[in-house]
Length: 326
Image 1 (cartoon, rainbow, N blue to C red):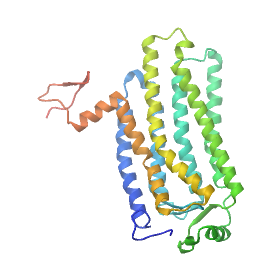
Image 2: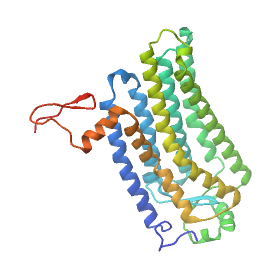
Image 3: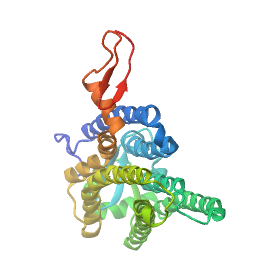
């Protein structure tokens, strides 16, 4: 059964509402996270503020695109969907947007780590540093926006594609205007191969920059131990911040591939898996606010309403919090 009006997890009326609820909550948390990045980031790491914000922005885009722009109802094991968001009627660009924002969240981490790597000047050949960075950013940016095209080049004629999809999943005959992304298994394998290649590139670059920063004492003797300790702590926090929401994506991704390659169908579990993907931003923002001390203190101040009492500033966790007199 593709639709079930009596089920919260399988009704075309309730599933979009769940997406919208998650996304609205996510946007509020993202806005607060953006405020912390722009206003509460310590001056000692001010140079990384833009890349932290970029890192945060891609997570916001992922939640917004999935929860508001698309609001999808996927029908596995067929690569088909029905859009209930404001991009309904523009389904042809949906696969591109989904792959783009997913890859963008990964590349934002790569760019953030490269920024830290460059600031510490690990690359000794300074005359080549600018050239290396230009090539690095141009190549990665072009690839980021180009490779998602693989998700739309195989889009079939929709009349023929729907006939083939209904043969695999008969209940689709009840669904009006569902969109078919791809039908041929060889084409599916090509898309999966390109996606895995991209994941490898992102992971390889992230590991390289993170490892170089953590092992900085082996590369340079001109950087103080205090700076090295701060950078290591910062990088570890960033990696944990990324790994926590990424771990939440593993079960849905595993389930999606399992359905595609085994022709397994369970619509309720499919919808639940997409809900988990949409929670990525909330989990990532919560991790950021908890892992970075300055941001965590801001949350504590907000929750416990810590403020200035009778014009006297309060000391909270070794830093001064000032607010307007009550």
